[in-house]
Image (tube, rainbow, N blue to C red; front, side, top):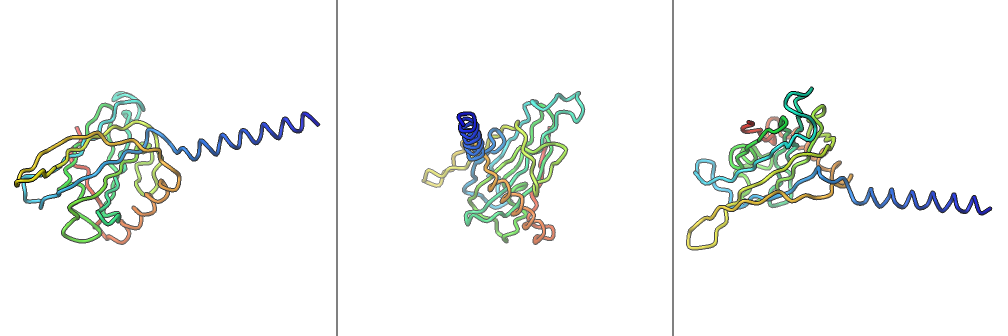
Length: 198
């Protein structure tokens, strides 16, 4: 009888730990930031997103060149996904994206693009590289510049690292489904571009 009670207790502890781990989400694969005060594309004022692959999934001379994909999801200030895309980055590579030209110039939600919004990045397995069905794998790091307007008609540029967030299964599913929806409805709209990769 004691063995049965001990076994049941052990199973309950394992299930509880698994549930706790699941509730914590997947770490080191999900990054969030924002853009603000987006100026028209013809303006010289722009914001930049830089994403690096530090090479934890292989080297430039390994099979696949250590590639990890940055699945990028752009939301407008109404919390609607306006663009999404996937950009491969080899080990030690740097992806440079213009907020004006790469991330907000082709919105599903209409023109002109929102002046403020949210940018989310999921680090995706290189064999997948699909923002509609991401397969998270740890690695990428990202930074974004921001245009701040403290007053008196001046703009100041600041830079900030993307904040890590624990990726929950519901959010992962939502991002993929919303991106599928955006790309399907967009008929060419709603797809961001990958800018410059070095």
